[in-house]
Length: 156
Length: 399
Image (spheres, rainbow over the protein chains, first blue to last red):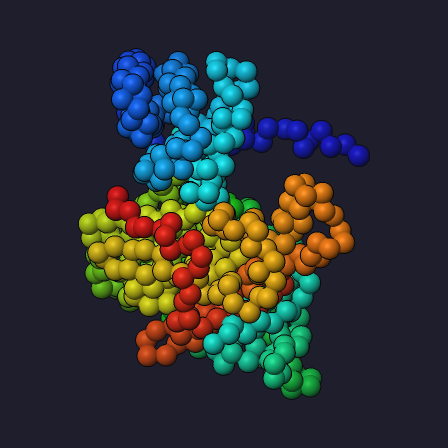
């Protein structure tokens, strides 16, 4: 039976098709500015970590995290900054740190954990660290947090 | 009071709708037929099969006053069924009337308007068909609400004024439309949603916070507030005056259906297999607990306590999970380990539909749910238990 018709991209013939960028509100900031912000935060995070203020450092990274197209470099910088925090936090401190985050912060953190797990070997990603955080975060924020990571089109 | 549980079939129940006297229920058992079960004491027996559709039935609604049933299906059709005497035997039979929907994708959801002179059919054709009866031609005609819907409409709900319609859609928005039909409706009085309401006026458009499909929408009994549940595991309550939107993110799996039981209470249910109660007012909303008291009456619960502290992680706390965990961590398999594969909730799978069942004193006192497990359950809406680990996760957040 001929089934080639199943492979036709019917959306190409639909002038009213729903586009990817219509699915979420774009980041109003300029890509260059987003990158600037991300780099500045690196410094702020380092000084927060020097004071061993893990919650403050995480909040700095997770607030207004870059999302959407055209900000790949800012995303990479942010992921790198976040990994520094995750890798330096003692595993016994993790639950208390997570509980101190806002719901927004928890959701964004989950997005980064999945992003990190999708890029094995990149930078100083350590699978066991990410899985440790993932376990603790799921215990606090529940499976709903994972569901939001999957549905949210504002990918980090 | 314990919920009444009826197992109607071994197949999923896609949707259900009770007759006005609650003696009959119309369900779709994930098939092309709508089936009417009649209550006989403590059980339900199949008495009638409405067979006309040739694809899966997606939604059924039974009008309580005019005693008509409307069915919507993936075959892009809707039928209105009315009881008429058979010309030969004089016996009452359900006679179908085809509705001209004029949509080119599946019909997904259908609801009668409060006055039962119109109904709305949501569809995959990025449109909602508002159908009303044309006595001259003796058929149901439809008028399409199209703009600005960008994707499949998953649910609809009528405002008590018979004109406004809420719709939840896969483009991650909940909207409020005017479905005013000149031939049918009187001029509506002004509401909080607007005063001038020609057909297809958009009275409100609200996005789900983390980009989930809007699975369910519902107007409050007064019609002054709107609730919607979306696939990002959250439920939002909108007061259009401000506009104030309360969004509650839940820690468990998403809801797919909801109903208001009073002006200050909502029951929502879905992939987490239990009906969850939210309460609040214009000043704020929060989750209060579950109708499913999953801690009592289940003796096996103690044997599962090994998972202990992490019990907030929803359905992971099941016997099936502990069987695998025991096999993994202790090398136990089969013998000795429990063979019970039940989850702790009354519904053993996703709840597909929750509807008001019984009204008393202006409140819904009982709600009914149907699920993928083939069960139909009638719950006491006031019997709320603070589910373990549930309430603490759900603080209202003002946007």
